[in-house]
Each structure stands twice: as C-alpha cells, then as structure tokens.
Image (cartoon, rainbow, N blue to C red; front, top):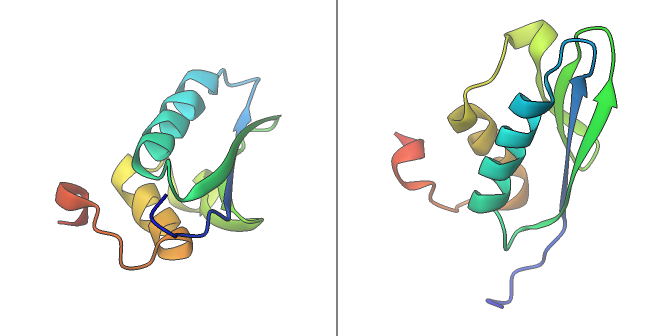
Length: 94
C-alpha cells in the first residue's frame, strides 16, 4: 500500500420501487474501480420514494431530487474531493 489512509465509506441509497439497483450498482462499480485504494467500504442501501443519494462518510454529495441523476464524472469528483484530494482523475477531470 502507498501509505494512504483508507477511510472513505460511500453509500448509494437507491429506490427499489423505481428499480434503480442496476444504476446504483453500475455507479458503485465505477467508484470502486477509481478509488479502490481510498475507500474502506461501499454500500448499496435499498430505499423508497424515488431516492437516489450518494453519501461519503455520512455526508450527502449527490441527491437526485436536487440535482437529477449524476454523471459518473460528477460523483467521482465529489467523492475524490472528500477521500483523496489531489488525486488526478485523468480524463474525468476535464
């Protein structure tokens, strides 16, 4: 390991009524691929009522009700800013 502290816990709460599990799982895969060294855990949390919320260490970084569905790049930047400031996201930073 490169000496980085692994501390970030990401939670994606998704609406089961809306059948958004595939979208949540895909976003989870994107985040785990990008931040495999920085995240301690990534949880998928079933919810209701049209919820699609991404939290990092219990802080909401994306709420579909306020901002619409996220592009992966936007969520990666929000997660990066909390778990790995200064980490380059390559083409996702442009």
